[in-house]
Image (cartoon, rainbow, N blue to C red; front, side, top):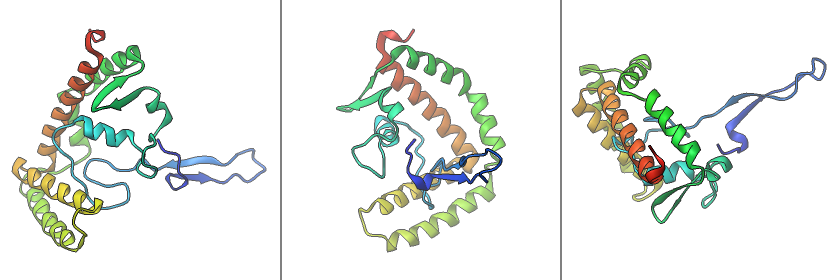
Amino acid sequence: YDRTPWNFMFRRGDGLSGVANDVAFIDNGASVFSRARGGYKGFPDRFDIAQLQVILSNPQFPGQPVNEAYDNFVKIKNGKIHILDKMFMRDLLMNFRRVVEDSNIDTFVTQAQYLEGQRSVDDAEALIGELEQELARLPKGSSDYIKTQDAIETYRQVMEAGGEAPYLKKALRQRSDDIVKMFQEALGSYYV
């Protein structure tokens, strides 16, 4: 995780109680359809090495890893994953497969209260209209333009799936499968 100051909120100690300047909040950034700095982004139904590279790269400091621990664990070179601690990755991947199974994905999406059905489809259609208007005002080729285009494509897929909940269930299952396959291939014969 990058440790830039705007990603943390501290609780100031009073100097008497012994309470120091404790971390009270850490901004975890973007998730699913939302961008870390506001707005929408795409959430593709597939996961690939290019997306992993984005996760591992620091957006504020290009060319630098987002997190030193990640950089000491996994790297991407010439479009291929290089795992530095294969035993740990094998154990992590096996645990991931146990936790992120289809029934749990369904439970996660349901508990997050994503909508399905006509209301969700109508919301997605309205949002696409707003995003298309925003897209018209953005400089073509800019990062915001590309992210807005990706968001529009994602919400079109949401409409086809019958709402956010069914789209997310499908997308998260596929992304989970892609992650497992990607890291199994990187581990090679080490993965049993």
